[in-house]
Image 1: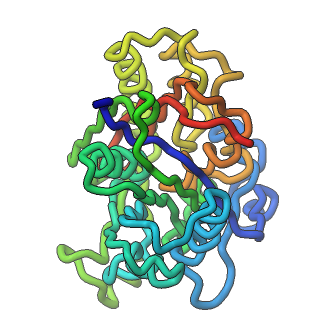
Image 2: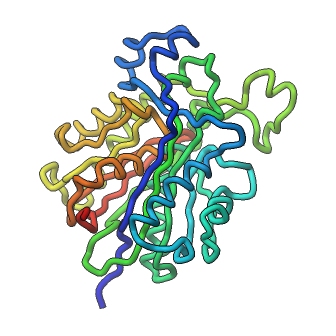
Length: 332
């Protein structure tokens, strides 16, 4: 009997209509288009506008498009792993909210929080359920409404983040295609450098925490950059070495879209040329859990069955990792 792999059989994405440009940010904080572009590679980002709209609302658009593309009903989904840093609520899980909104009445699900590495953590976790034979259709969603936790008077964060959501469907494959390997890492000592200071059980919401603006994302840029540029590049190179892949073997690098310089460093460490790197940071900024699935969605038509693809990410707290997969289908 052939070994079962978990293969991505469909991808889709959604970004809100509102475009927040560098020019508009210049009117809000002390910054400039040149400063933002030279340091991050970002020109614009999308923002979800509208009363009462949350991360699950973007996911509904993305997932319904995926279901239509794959030609299946939501009731066929058995498990939803929702990777997000900005859940609709502390509880219930956004995965459960999404299941209700799309009619996935036969699915169970949960939220996975690993900051910007969440989607690859979720992909690896979802693959385990498929490889074990437990489930045949696992939906992995990566999405964030980062605008809901950004202080637009803090130029260290407001220039970077945007809103967006992507998703991938995992199904069994006996041709040797799909997820081949993953390396996932965490280092909790990074919690002081990138995270949110209040709102959890250690420091619940109070007048003091709100007044101190501790419910917004906090980042110490230089420290985070140093950790990210090293660890994301190293883990991508490590997964290549572990699987005897050369740069010529890799069809595509799908990096987390945090900073153009970090992306370039990762590609250089792998020896991969720029024409093999998926980059859309200039249009969407850092959508946290949404970056990697949004890239797969936008590049889907260029992917070929059997392509070797390396995903790599780094996130707050700190989290980082890489997934190596073989693409399972040609786009019709």
